[in-house]
Length: 609
Image (cartoon, rainbow, N blue to C red; front, side, top):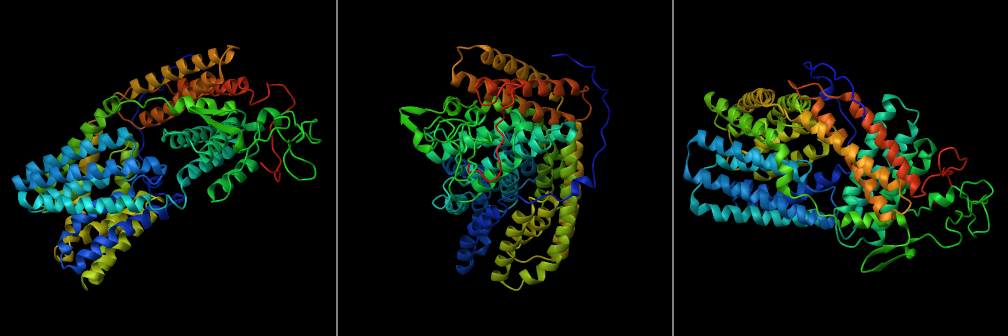
């Protein structure tokens, strides 16, 4: 790989307006919003009926676990939710024991900062998605400043555990209705991304961005499909075929049909039958459904619209062609490598924690300093500043700055909303619980558009929770929250600037080396006539994963300050070479015609898949 002269290092401009720009809502924004309401409402209403609404913060700690793992298949979701609940209980236990042993605020802030760093590192290493460590840090930090005795701890933990079990049931509730819902959504996103890449196949920056996004979406789809390591169901095998078709489209985007990819994506998103795809090797030759010869238009579809040409010379291409015999066996070589990849043992957790050391140090330092400064200013709830600092830290300084802007704007607007809602919440316990539920729903419904918009509801939610043990003056709560937000954002960001990820450049070099080696290995396997489909598929997947990791590593490093310049040109050249090698591996498997042939696997809209 040829190297290029690095660009000079410089301080990068930090966005302000761009950080507040609203995006498209998530396809499943309503799922976490409804889940958190369903998880919070029964325990809170039960405690209200018993006249013990002061215990609601403990049940809410368990209920908030329902926010996690909505993008995971249900078999994996069950495990992730269980670990999240255990992690929440562990952090809560440490906080409650600390609160019962000492009332020294400096010690409590230090404990909260260390917990926040551990929670941040573990959530990043295990890729526990939104809301990641923020909820866990909020629960443990708030508990540090609640008066506690050792004798009360078992009962409070039991309340949190019971609510956590209920949250687990809420999270798993859709499984009987849509057992493959998360896999369907991930597959649909990969198909949509491949279609967008095909639409921008002429190149340029827009095309390069669409291709990178498409490879990331395809990689995410494979992660979703392969996270469950038991034998795949017929539905999951059909989804794997569709993801393979997205990969084929990425290998030759100019030959792909975006309309067909989008039609498959729409069909997958619903609850109906998953589209059946033909074999692009045979479609390139336009075989008739009876195997007697090519279809008249060479597209793989009948001229009378009665159905697709058979693409295997007469044998039906449906899920009945798949069979089990011990390990996964199938007569479609596209899926052989999937079975091999599913058997690969994941990397141990400790090996994933090492590169996150700068982020953990930054989190501990920033949270501790934010809490100390808040204490010095006379704050009664320094954990607000601590949690604000903990919520800032992202992959790099630029993203951390954007989060700081979003947090400050969202919290300032949120305290105004709280001032308007507080008179209603103070009408009685039921009004307070209903306001909390409304804020929970609003936060999860809006946060997908932009973090600051969700914070507009998170802020009054946090303030309302402080009123569960008893009503407090609105003015004092608003003033304290504004001060702690500004302190946490300022001190937390300064800590991020002071503790930069100086390993970012080395991580990019390692990622480049990994891509080079994966590309060389894939090229050797593709050139070897004796290569098995499983070996070829494993090499191709390894290269695709390396390319996605390179882009993520380069993006993270690009926003860091005070580091050596990044080899941007080498990154681009490595991506281009990897894309060409990926296309060669696909052609080696016979999924694409060789360059220069007239046949394509383009589809016509209206033909059955």
